[in-house]
Length: 162
Image (cartoon, rainbow, N blue to C red; front, side, top):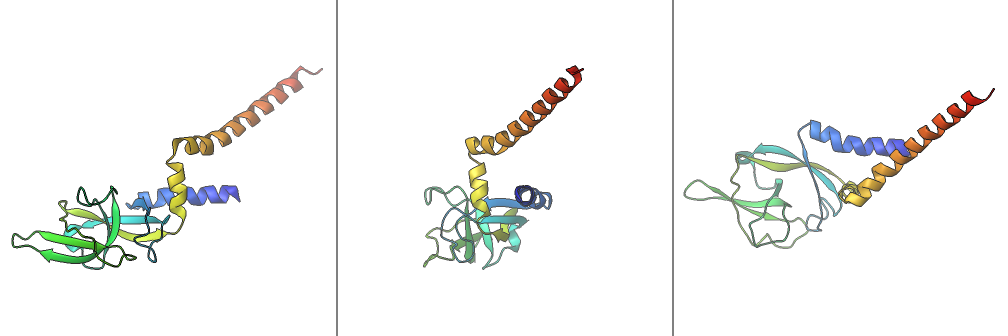
C-alpha cells in the first residue's frame, strides 16, 4: 500500500514534468470552489497572445500589491492599449471583486492552468521542508542499509560455522 502511494506521488511529480507542465501549490483561498487551498495545479506554457477572458493563469503580480510571489487567478478583463499592449485584470473565483491592479505580461509565453489535484499540494509543501525530506528519504534508506548489513552479518556468521 505504501509502495503504491509512493509510486503515485512520484508519477504526479514526474509525468507532468515530462509532458511539459509546471506545477504550483495553491496556498490561499482566493480560488476556492475551483482550486481549494492545498490543491496542486499544473500549468502549460501558451503564447501570451492566445490568452482570453476566463483563462486561469499563474503569474507574478505587480510589486507592492501582494506578498505572494506567484498568484493563480482567472483573467477578468483584457484591455488593449493604444500602443497595442494588452493589459490584464484578474480575479480569484472566491473573491467578490477583481484584483485592484492591472498588469501586462512582458513575455511571449505565459503559464495557463490545465488541471489540478485537490490536497496533493500539502504533500509537496511538506516535502519542500528540508527536515521532512531528510526523514522521508533518510529513514527508508537507513532501514534498507541496516537490513543489508544484517544480512551480510548473518551470511558472514554462517561461513564461520564448521
